[in-house]
Image: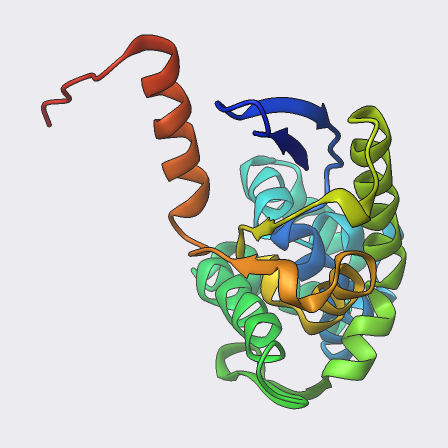
Length: 214
């Protein structure tokens, strides 16, 4: 989070704070609490289960030549599911399905997560998901307070709150922000282009107009 002060003209970064929580982190929580257990993967050794939480971490498993032998030693249905996920070409679409379920909960109270290749079909409730991510939301709230403290300002002094990224659509997150800043001051920016646009504006401020040939 960045606090910008433009009272004297050009915007100035008055305070900044951050935490390593993003959309994929929340996908991982959905996997850990609902999807993984529905597939019986909670029977796996904890280290292996944890590595299956996100698309990023599962790529490390796919690149590890020792994993097939480990799965053979574990045996059983859970190992078969992991083998199919890693080595039968299902990983990309599987984690897309998990992400899509998370996104659907921004607009619906419940959604059904289906992934036929792994015989997965499970109902996911927004209330359950939001209760599972509450610790992460609280950490984000603490980070916001830190940024305001660094800027030596208060939430009441903030005129606008610009929301970027897909996770800003999660109702519980937006409700938290509304409690701090007021709903009327929240402005949702395009989740897919806002960050890149901001980087472009900053680059122009630093180095002037730049022509790019592709």
